[in-house]
Length: 325
Image (cartoon, rainbow, N blue to C red):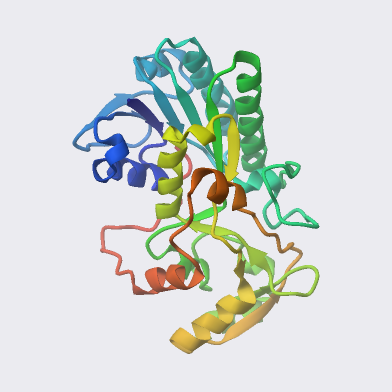
């Protein structure tokens, strides 16, 4: 196997590159990383420096490749979205379909393709549910990527798989996604949902959010730990049942903010503040991945909390949003 990983310096990419030495299925694999804005120096990984939007750079990276794990993405970056998400994937798929060595192409998709908490669903979101992007270029590009992958399989008969993940957590990300004030990691921005006085009180008193969905119940939102995404990605690269399929890769149950608040009060003694939102509580269903791939997440809500609240971040290990590039 010769495996090309795009987005190799990002959150998922770095963990993927660290996994093959520990996984017997990839003991003999050659790993290639296509890197653009950030450098990479890792034993056993061949680095191709270039742009995913360059046909020549993609051709160099694809030379002799049997498997592709496409992780590269940009978020709300309209100036880069088309080059990376559309042109970049098009060039990868074109090179893949014309390659004499290509075997399987795996895309890391996102639950933004089905609108995660922005779009309402009357039942659990499966791989057969309609795609419903929320506003913004990121969600739109994730829909386009899934459709491109699907159509290339139909047009050219190539072996493809999409693993669709919600918000991916590592280290202490989950803890800081739940704080108020300047240390908040990710969204939604509390200032958009709360009066300023409530926001300042929540920050000063160390409260945790109990988001309430549009229907008046505690919000349910899907998360997944990066370790579980990596295990799913490696399985999707080699499992026969992954051919031509899409799989939701997520925790067995979405995070219920009411239960989350109760667990944090029991563990840390923290009080919650209710936040009324226009969001919809949805359930991203991972049954297909569990049944067909034999994959299951190791990290549930309680384990996610424990890992995030006990993690000690080194001074040089800066928490970051990995987009763009």
